[in-house]
Length: 198
Image (tube, rainbow, N blue to C red):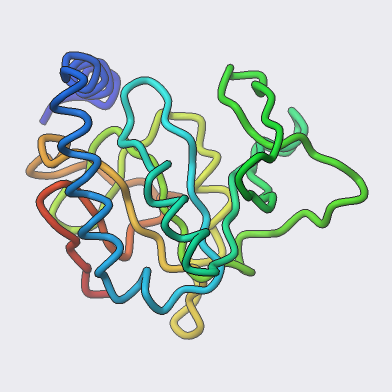
């Protein structure tokens, strides 16, 4: 089994090698599959992310969700000592500014309510690799695992549904798991949406 650091390098390089045409075609199929999926159709509050480093582009899906009347959110990196995510409302035209990792996000503003993870119905999460059991390899910062850590201990009212967003080639045969890893409930690629049995 390839170690996590090497696998991250390989998958990130593969994402970057995609041509604009390949990326656009994959995004269109991905958007269509997610839009038809039960988790998305039944969700009222949905968290997205903005693509970085070749990640699957969720912006067309965000626009679709907004037009459908869903509440849309983007993750915001909290204070340096928090190592977790908050979620801020998003709508077309909301100003964005780069966070300390260079990723655009809505600015944290005191007069706008900040949302915690459990208030969401569906969260689309980025990943570097995933396996057939719903295990996810992220970038290594642990932000998503910390933010959704409470889901490891819940058997009922598991909110939100965690859906990984990826390209089909990011699937691997197996990933090592650690006690703090939070598995996915589903994963979406240009090939379709797969729901894992929890």
